[in-house]
Structure formats: C-alpha cells, structure tokens
Length: 214
Image 1 (cartoon, rainbow, N blue to C red):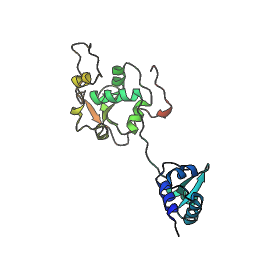
Image 2 (cartoon, rainbow, N blue to C red; image 1 turned 90 degrees about the horizontal axis):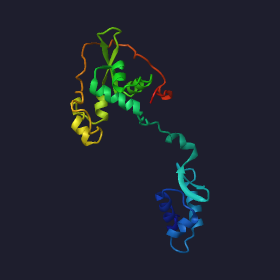
Image 3 (spheres, rainbow, N blue to C red; image 1 turned 90 degrees about the vertical axis):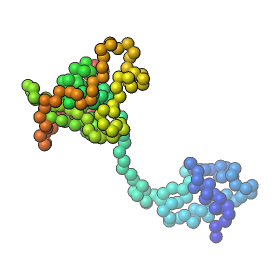
Image 4 (cartoon, helix red, strand yellow; image 1 turned 180 degrees about the vertical axis):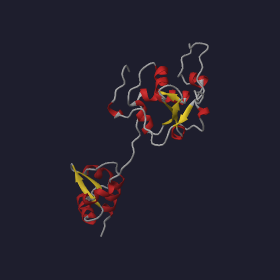
C-alpha cells in the first residue's frame, strides 16, 4: 500500500529538473518523514516497469528502463548555419538573379570557394535556372520558394531596398549618390532552361572547404 510519504517523494522526483538527494527531499517533506522507506517502496513499485527509480551519484531520479532505451532514439534535422561567404553569395543571387558564378565573383570581388554554391543548392535555397546564351554556356542561378519561406517573404519584391537597409544599419551612410540596390529578378534573362539531369558546375565536400582570401 502506497504511503503518503511515497506519494510525496514520487511527486518531487517526477517534477524535479534533475536527480534529488535524500537531503534535498528532506527539505521539502514534513519533519520525521521516513524517506528511505519511501524510496524503497517506490523502487519496488516501479520494478519491471517502463519507468524505473534509479540512484545516480547518491541522488534519485526516474528514468526509462535500460532495455527500452531504443524507443527513445530520435532522428532530427539540425539547422545548418550559413558561413559569411554563403550568406553573401545568397544575397547576390537574390538581388541579381539570374546570375552566373563569374558574375557572383565579380560582385563579391573574390573567387568563390568550390563549396559555397554547393551548400546553397543542397539546402534548397538556390537552384540552377538555365544556361546563359554566351560563350561557354555558363549556368545561371536563382533563389527558390524555400528561400522565400525561410526568410518569410511573399515574393522577391519584398526583399529590403536601400532605405530599409540603411534603417537597419546594413548600409553605410556615405555611399555614392548614384548607388542603388538592384531589383530582384532584374538580371540578364537571355538563358535556356536547364535540362533534366544536368549537374551543377562543380560538386565537393563543402564542409571541409575554406574560401581563399576570406
């Protein structure tokens, strides 16, 4: 038969953020409560159950039975933080699309690492739009619907303009008077669609890449 002290100890252990020692329990319970007997009773009650009473470093806690640990395994996606280079590349693509890799490098003033575009493609923020009708037929890049969803934009026209960027402290106040933020989607449109199955210009293990000159 469960005693009042057992119920009280059970409630404290259940609600505790971590294991509790006998002294911790004693501070909460009425003076003279037989805590050791309550612990012994609870251990017997929970023996063989899915949740059991366990002692860890002289402290008590409820935990999942060891033979059921496999049920607690969880697979989840961890958000990947973009590098500064990837953020800059994504911004250039968003405002200059459709844009080629060479054009991205020209805007940034530095050669893109072989992994920067790969990570944006893998995350689904960027897609290959087509091939420019120029010598070499370079691939052009643009943003995706996932890009709009990630940044909470209804359309590309909702991207911040120069005034919004200045207000947010993202643009210097002493920019040339003729400076203008490009209109998204206002790039060169002389391109042919990418054919199904075409691969990116390059593919590499971007997690191990460091960008030259950054």
